[in-house]
Length: 103
Image (cartoon, rainbow, N blue to C red):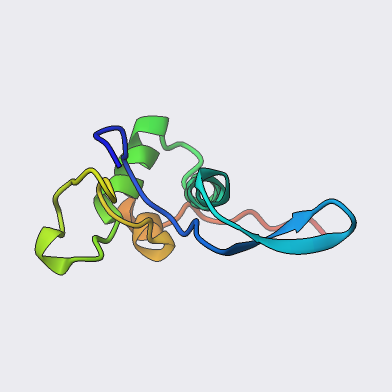
């Protein structure tokens, strides 16, 4: 918890793969950062011309604070809030048209 937190994501008791072809419950930033990175990649796949600054703004402006009274504001626990894939994707407007493979 500090002023370096920009955005939050699920990171407690996340099921992850471990050595020995197994799974275990893990917690921490190593579990939460892949959620944010995946949503950033999702946004980029729908908006391939978006800049990194635009994608970051989409993530931060669409994040949801757990305490509704803090919505739209930043704090040292959740930053701008918990990442929200649907809202982040919608933040940049309609997606680029998809390209269909040739038959």
